[in-house]
Structure formats: C-alpha cells, structure tokens
Length: 397
Image 1 (cartoon, rainbow, N blue to C red):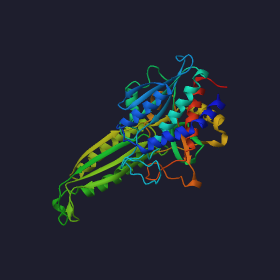
Image 2 (cartoon, rainbow, N blue to C red):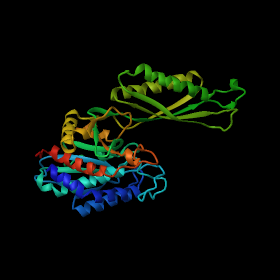
Image 3 (cartoon, rainbow, N blue to C red):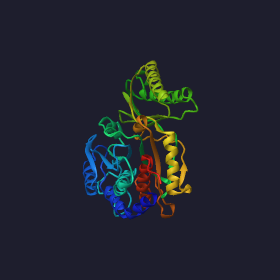
C-alpha cells in the first residue's frame, strides 16, 4: 500500500500542481469562497466522489468509501480561504483577484487534499472504512469556519474517530514535515477598547480629561497584569497593534482613543481568568483618572491540542513513509489556527508541511506578498495525507 501511494502521488503530481495554480490565481476571501467551492465540487465530480456542498456556507464534505465503509471513519481537513494581500510575485499563476492572495498556503492545503482524495479513490478496494474529507471555509476570520463546520454537522453521519490537518511551513524544506505532540498552538482573542475622556486645547490640559495619557497608562498596566498574574511557565502574549484617536492636530486633546489588540495563551482556564482581570483593571483604572472605558473581548480560536497517542502514531507513520531524516519535532507556536476547534472535540493531529527551498529563493514567510512554495511539496502533501488516513483506518502492511 505504501509503495502504491508513493507511486500515485508522483503520478498525480503534475495535475495537483495545476490545481494548486488554479486556486492560487483565483483566491477568495474568508466566507466568500463561492467559486472555489464550485470548482472543488467539479473536481470531486470528476473523481466520482460523493460529497455534500453548502456546509457552513461554502464548505464541502466528501466521503471516500473503502470496503466495509461503516467499519471506521477518519477525517482529513483543508481550508480554502485567502487573505486581503496584494501579491508581489511575478509568476504565471499570480493572483488575478486584485488585493486578494493565497499568502497562507490554503491553495496548497486544498490541492493536497484533492490529491489525497484522488489517491484514496484509486486504492479504495485496498482499505476498510471511510475517509471524510473536509474542505473548510473561513479559517482566517472569526468565528472560524471550523466552528461553523462542526455546528453544521460536518463531524456527524459518519462520525470520525480522529482527524488530521496540515499547514505549509516555509522554514522546513519541501519533502519534510514537523510535528508537536500535546499543546501546540495558542488560543487567540481580539480586544477592542475605547477610552473616553474630554477633549480640548493641548495647552490647557487642566480643563480636559486626556484619554491619550489614560491609554498610555492602561497599556502599561495591562502588560503588568499579564507578567504578574500569568504563570511564568504558561506562554501568554498581550499585544496592542493599533491605536487611534479622534482629532487631527498636535495641540488638540481628543475626546476618545481606540485600541485594538490580541491576547493569546496556552491554557483555557487562565484565558478566561485573564479576560475578567483585564476588564476589571481597565474599568477601575480609567474611572480613577476620570474617563470611561468600553472593553470588548471577541473570543476567538481555542488552544490547539495534538492528541498524544495520535501524534505518536502520526510521527511513526510519517517516518515510515518519508524517512527518519524528513520528520522533525516542532516547538510551541503562539500563532493560532481554527483547526483547534476540531482538536477540542476529538483526537486530532495538526502537522507542518515543509514548502521551502533556499537554493531557489523560496523562503518568504506566510502572510507576506512574496509567499510561494516549492511545488514538489505537493507530492508529500497529498501522499502523506492519504497514507495517514489508510494507516489510521487500520490497514497497515
């Protein structure tokens, strides 16, 4: 079976590259993947694969059925949305949708899963069970397409025993993967704060309640809250990336200041406690200085947890499929992923797919205007997903 999957991954490589390039040229923003969904459906039709469309809006759920399909089900997931970035790459498959780009590699994820579906469809008489393939919208935007897919029954009828997902990783060379067992990626929450004061002339601060000064104190105080109340062994990040005030001159104290930021951690209990503490501290501090505070926390993705036993199996199977030198251990990441929602409700493993090639200058990070991949990574991407699904279903050589 392993040799057959290797063979098919190379046989289907050119077609999968063409799929990836089509997706890259036609990116669509989160929850707007209408044409992408139609195109994925057309590929599944051509493969003769059963699927349900319109899941969580633009998502699809496909089923590749082996012998005795009711015996066991495992799931594979890919996300389909792109980012609001203008591409700077000068390539034949450059985005034709102005201001939208597959800068996070979701084109790679979708093409890899389509390739895996094609492989599995070709070997379906050689394994027992069903592989459920989730083509998911909206990973880049709250509330996250994964949460909506789950709410729309994507993990039911049939219910998978476990789920796998992969993500491009430019620091790793194409042909390699990386895995981290246990807690892997952070929760993420968006914070929006409005500090209201009383504006006036900058030369007469005694007649004003200065929201700029209050905001400065609030930012420092909230950072101290994180450093003094969070367990030092528990990674926690509070970053304010945006600050705006009304008004338009150097000698005007504005009426209000707006802050926007992100809060991330690796512990759900501390996450909720921190939310309460931040709101309480902000309200008390701003009031003590004569202002008023609106503190809004938009709860985002939870902590991504890679099931230990499943991750251990995944690592062994990946070594068997790729070779020991092609599988590495990864550190914690304070970035976030809505695959975390799946990991909260079932055994899950989310690993990194190497896509870099320094010799060819393919090193740009994700979420940049020059992100691209070494397309030989697609052979690994589709082949390993198919291999992991077959192994998890219990068909081992």
